[in-house]
Image (spheres, rainbow, N blue to C red):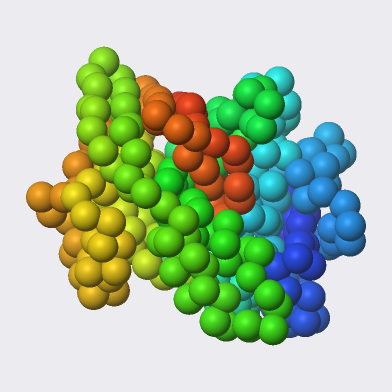
Amino acid sequence: MTSPFGTIAVIVDPRAGILSQLPLLERALDERGLEHRFLVANGSDPSALAASALDDGYRFLVAMGNDATIQDVVNGMFREGRTIREEPVLGVIGAGSGCDLVRSFGIPGDTESAAAHLLGDNTYGLDLMKITATGVTGERHTRYGHNLAQVGMGAQQVACAAKAPAWLGGSRRFYGFWCGYLKTKASRVTVEHDRRTWEGRAWNVVVANAQFTGGGLRLSPRSFPGDGVLDALVFTGPRSGAYTQLPRLFRHGDHVPDPYIQELKAKIRFEIRSERPLPVIADGVALGTTPVTFQIMPRSILFKL
């Protein structure tokens, strides 16, 4: 017995701290009769492993790790602007890594429960974001994102947390929050969305395909990753909103509507420009700075439910 989509190629990302979960996943797949092959990115690029698997004839790829792992696997599915194989299938095993994409679908974050979702032929057409950001010397870089991006304070906070000393352990996110807060000031921002334009001062802009980030914060509660629409939240008003809005964020995303949060939508693209370069991060991965564009790619791949 195997999946209706053929043998599963499991792309394992040790950077996500999930290697201890490998025996559990192997046992779960064997118990369900799912033929599989593990491809472990030991110092290699998960994107390259994903591309190689598709070239070898696999159609069903499973990203084992966090949202950065998923982004790498998704990017490996594309070559010259199109998928390497027609209708590739993406499965996700978060393995306790805090993966946020699966939360929008109600898929468990633990290994054994998530493995059960690899059975059958139930899939969902997943929208993607084609993101083109600016590099240090002005060059433009393009990546495909699947979950949620931030421009400004949110990106700075993630960057600070990533650079925090390892001895801080679980407090790195707390450190990143306040470090990013202190490093960020409101900037004049222009947000073009399809044929419309918003201009004003803002300290953070969220562009979302799905709902969750930061290990479970429902930052963009009106986003659905298969509706052909990208949602943007532009945070204006006093910078102190970064922490005064937290209680509402933790109440499962009832921070919108809010007079200091502009809600914008795009069926084609967003373009964000600013008076000074602002950092851009998507799915936990630093992509560069503004100016940045986000182009919707409706139902580009199949997500295994």
